[in-house]
Image (tube, rainbow, N blue to C red; front, side, top):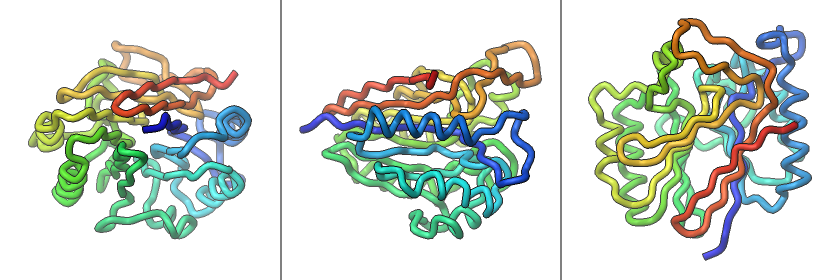
Length: 255
């Protein structure tokens, strides 16, 4: 079994030409800087995985900006949706993105490790949700993986981190259906999430999770205020090393 490298970015928040920049900071040059560094230093990677909030407004024009950015990138990429994305517009620009029962999710195997790309976008609102159809699909993927290692890439983390305005927007699991699926699984399983614009790690439902900071702007850690504060930190990307059931996740600030 060989060592494999995955690249990971999240929360790009790209805008179409002429659209106001989120928080008055243009996300496109920050993304270019990250991708240039990945191209220069990590061209041996197997995948580039983008875990949602690819664009800010969900417009077709903003996805065209993303398409132009990715068209010459030398590593195969995978797109997930977040709360700012619009599935139909994304598919209009990226018609080859896999769809399962209307959701932008699929799974693949990489040298014995199962990579699951899970659609957590809610029908309305900015929180995350998993409907019965998505839960059934996920259960089938986990069963298919058996005792093999699994990485689940998703936009919304299922855990509260102690920041009230973010905790309200986490993945909701009202019947504990998602957590039961994970608790029933003994094999190595890792959740990899975006959405929070912060680097966070821990354990939930018996398995480790990692949340990666954004290529746009990070959020200041504040457990008291009910408002989110962004600050001009460096864009962040992830470098994931897989070796059998071993997973190492490096969060790298592009300086």
